[in-house]
Length: 233
Image (tube, rainbow, N blue to C red):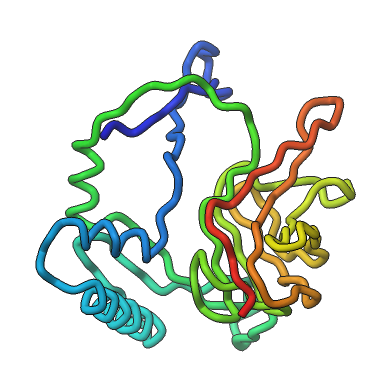
């Protein structure tokens, strides 16, 4: 299957006609989706055994990184990193200013696969927020659980919004009632990443995540909807 892509103006350099290609993702897959795809290959390995192996691999890679090791795999290479600025040579680690974070790069098999991939040019989509992944730091899960009063993180494209505009922001929509709850506390606000406190008022149940952002001089609000439901347990 070809990778869909479209062209945008480059906006840099002397040649104003130059374009840059951007991939338009077909959607997002979580771990359960991947396990279902693996199960359809008919390997004879049970879904439960694949789940257990994936859980163990995730735990061991995470533990190794937290112990300070780099981890090189066929799919990806992982390296522990340290974020934050130290004021001088004697400044000590302070969890309120510094934190560790893993960086990830292509592994040898993934790199070869992507270099061999073919593309299909599509029309330019309407600009709008595109949330691709949600990480819940309270439960240490991805694309599934929502923990009130913990740190949530959204990764994607076109995510940055004007926090002074009451109509823009991050919202959680209750599936049952349709009630929208806006995120009030945001610590990181960039086009590729949002980090914030999950509202403490969320009751148990399922929610849809939305990022709302204004475009054009008229302030048209466009909504980016995350494709997976999130659950407050």
